[in-house]
Image 1 (cartoon, rainbow, N blue to C red):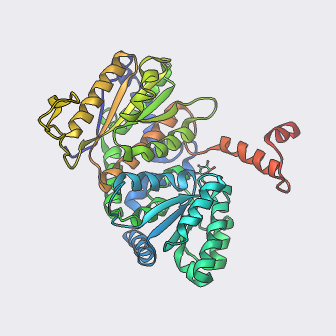
Image 2: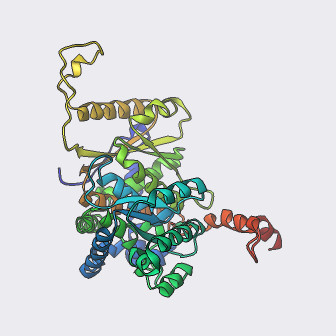
Image 3: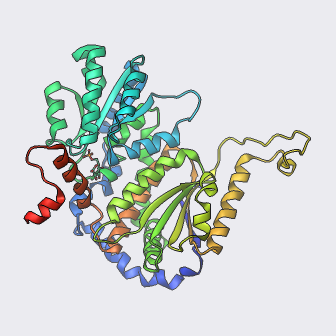
Length: 441
Ligand SMILES: O=P(O)(O)OC[C@H]1O[C@H](O)[C@H](O)[C@@H](O)[C@@H]1O
């Protein structure tokens, strides 16, 4: 197997083949909108052709800076929130060992919340490490990463002096705007640009994701190659054979029948942050105008022992998309001890991955029979190439799905509400709560 397989064979009786045929004209209209870039939010379609357009020189420059940081430091702190860190974290957790020797830098994250205790602990941990920092913010004005960077910049300058710190800090931000851009220019930090036409949640294959991913020792060239081939594949295939369009269409068919929550289920703990990235991608893209599927994620088989009951037997508003890997890599065999005290004698000599696979099959059958349609997305193996492919697959599917739903999949106006209230409550000059603003209007 050397392709991504999308399998809707366990979607159950809620999906009938003619329903896909019936959506064909709508899918073609969406395809045209993407192609001609004339749909809502089309000024943010830069990610669509990005993998093919990304210059080798830019890729090499990212690699060069990553190697420079690797030479100076063993820990990289990635400061960012939402689309400015989730893609990198997803790839790094998927593709680097949880235990054991790392090929690249040890990566930690900051600026993705406002908890002071975490920052205190992180700063203390960094005291005895050789540290580099990549601060990432498209707007350059987001509060969480800005506070984290203020704290870490102060620590870095104390530890390495101003010029030593400068060597170790890389900024990824807008080409021209924002406080972070101004700061980078003032301090002379190495800077990478987030293209204007690529929104945060679609930016993992730009320097936003690629620099931390490269610093972690992952082959970004292979990742882009995977994305590039995905780009070509999902552009050319006939629409009803196209996995991206089928997935988008089926989500919408199920949604229209009351399946208002989609669970992304994975069977490898390293995929947790793929779920987090995917939730932002679909949640921010589709959750607007009082519509949209609620994206949730579960890790299997872990969550079968906590949330399994609900999925099997709770409200029938769920469908499930499993992300699977065909080749499980190393085979760890269950030891044959010659005894059966634990009742596992029948599994002796069998690979753990077989048990995981049968658990997956059993779960899919049980959920389908319990009224939860199951979709499966299988990649051949866990590699940089296939992670790049998967990122592109989901981004394109999300755009198609959002357009089918009838929303602009590239804006996020609702996110401003909490920010307005927080600034007003903190007494930021000139700020007002959302309620005050609405009353004034
Ligand atoms: O990259 P930044 O401008 O700092 O934004 C980081 C994140 O926060 C915002 O509030 C948006 O809702 C997200 O789409 C974005 O990814």
